[in-house]
Length: 300
Image (tube, rainbow, N blue to C red):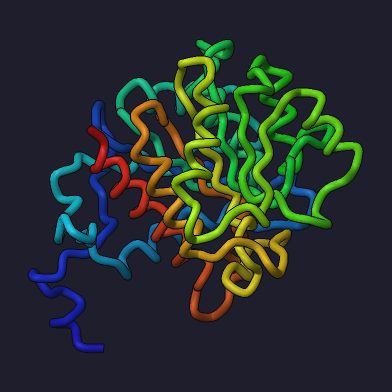
């Protein structure tokens, strides 16, 4: 590889964000949960892999009729990884709550989906009654116990109102009648995978915000990358053939990030140790970070 190209000053690379100190527009932080995964996982290796994939992209993006825009004006920092989030969830929440107070947006890199609980708790728990949650996921995640299959149930048990939750991308043959009845009982809005097309993404996000924003408070967005078609995300153990496309996921995420009441995201359920040789799953995750930043940069 030509080293001159890799250091081209006219092609600024994404990533390499400075270490977080006391304030930023956006903070990136790793939450490497993996010990309570329902299947053996090295999802704790994923935050580092996503950061490495970020370097493959530019920090300049296109917005159609608005022309070329850059992310250079944003103050973006990296707070490193939360230590031992599986064994010390309380400590993780304290650290994440500190980052939430010091920024306008937190982007948490999982880790399996159990990372959603400390991240959402840190963002929302002081105002559960008004808070909202949007998930992009093939699964309901309302299993009993504490695992990567239970974060939505756990957040309801902590006080998040079910009617303030919207779940996008729920897949056929990926859930059970029992958990479907739990979701219905708690008034959760479900937008199944079959309802999502490249032509109605704006309508989909409006429906999601109608539910998650009903309380008028802050909103957390959980991106479980196994919502995507398995062909594109081989490092997501529970992904299925027929999930949404990377284009649909990226577009949804960008629109969600532009909403002023969204205060945090998590990107979860990737086991980087299982990725394909071309790193397609972590590359998509890195693009999701950039789509979040692009949407945030478009806020009024």
